[in-house]
Amino acid sequence: MMGEQTREGGGTTMPGRDQEPRSYYVGVDVGTGSVRAALVDQRGILLAFADQPINQWEPQFNHHEQSSEDIWAACCVVTKQVVQGIDVNQIRGLGFDATCSLVVLDKQFRPLPVNHEGDPHRNIIMWLDHRAVSQVHRINETKHSVLQCVGGVMSVEMQAPKLLWLKENMRETCWDKAGHFFDLPDFLSWKATGVSARSLCSLVCKWTYSAEKGWDDSFWKMIGLEDFVADNYSKIGNQVLPPGASLGHGLTPEAAKDLGLPAGIAVAASLIDAHAGGLGVIGADVRGYGLACEGQPVTSRLAVICGTSSCHMGISKDPIFVPGVWGPYFSAMVPGFWLNEGGQSVTGKLIDHMVQGHAAFPELQAKATARCQSVYAYLNSHLDLIKKARPVGFLTVDLHVWPDFHGNRSPLADLTLKGMVTGLKLSQDLDDLAILYLATVQAIAFGTRLIIEAMEAAGHSFSTLFLCGGLSKNPLFVQMHADITGMPVVLSQEVESVLVGAAILGACASGDFASVQEAMARMSKVGKVVLPRLEDKRYYDKKYQVFLKLVEHQKEYAAIMKGD
Image (cartoon, rainbow, N blue to C red; front, top):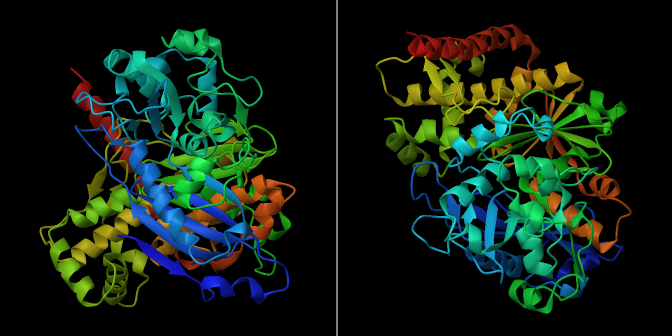
């Protein structure tokens, strides 16, 4: 399933269009289900795109695995595709972003198994893997001071619990043989350059590294991973660079051959995928749209990167500690700013789950296919059909969803929470499916509102949402976020903001821009502004009250069942 599109006529005719000579940058984004690449010019215009699916394994519930060899091979397929027919000497830089999955290699950089089957090909514990529940519980019981920078409670999706799980469960086959533990974005930049320096983004956000103080020996000793301290952290990274910094001597001849790019071009220290999305949208030039944030600092903008899961990125000049929200992380996304990162563990995945599990899904699929539409485009038009004279959001007056089917990441940081639906009827037709879908989308937007309230209570102040990622292509999802938060939503001119973010890294590494901020302002552009329907505010305020009651009740039910 490879997709490729080329704009502006493709081929070699591109550079002659305008007076300034074209410079190109390649951005590579490794998502949960596919690797995507884009060719982007110095104005942030996406000229070619390609994608390639990657394998995932789920050998048992909550164990999710991938293969670093499989992922690198997919990177090679897509980069070769996007540079077809252009003068490769005009390619100035390469940037990678990826999910924060854990790659395990031996001392000779060969893959090691992270599974009981002993299959070394599957050497990645994926970001969404929840195998390390008992380990993270014990880590959180230490109440160590490093936990203050992850909202007070570490998530099972971070790397320390997964490393501890490997030590406790795969001592002989994996732990004792391991030479290198990489975050996936850092694995990619190592593969491209042979430089094993890590990005500040990965280490600070997922590994408890501090941009000011470095590693905290007492933390690793306290949780039983003193092994890292003993060898001066060589297995997890003792050379750290800010995102966008140029690595080593650039692309190695071997990697250049694999990727179909010129050897020696600049390769940037990488970003986690959500952070690349944040970088790709948050700095956009908003002049002329009448937005409140135009006259405000960049700290008034909240970037929401919404795909399989969602991340809420807010930056501040000074550190802000938000209970249940990750950070503050210094320079982890935009150099010189502190980052707070809220998140929802499943969003796109939850919408798929609700829609595909419904009895009317086969009928929906057939009808959407007959109309050459995606199931979501069909559902959106079906909702418009059944809403009659009222606003579409009012169809869920008696159907309410709590969206934590995979626990709550922010701001409650509670893995044990479950999903809830109240207001079900006996009918199972397409109307019911459409309304359940709408209620799920609204629930995700209410979750965003809850995160914003927690961040603002701690000291942030936001006036505008900047959305990117797969779900930002769904107009219903965007409108519901505007209506439910009461804020305008800015969408990028390039829907592939994550890829633009990766390309911005390559542009910084090339030296073509003086700073990440300059590249952001030049390469990210506003495409569309979606305003909230303020006349519907009272309805959504009431729905939000119900939303908060749902989780309150869930906790009460749990207490009743635990009681004597």
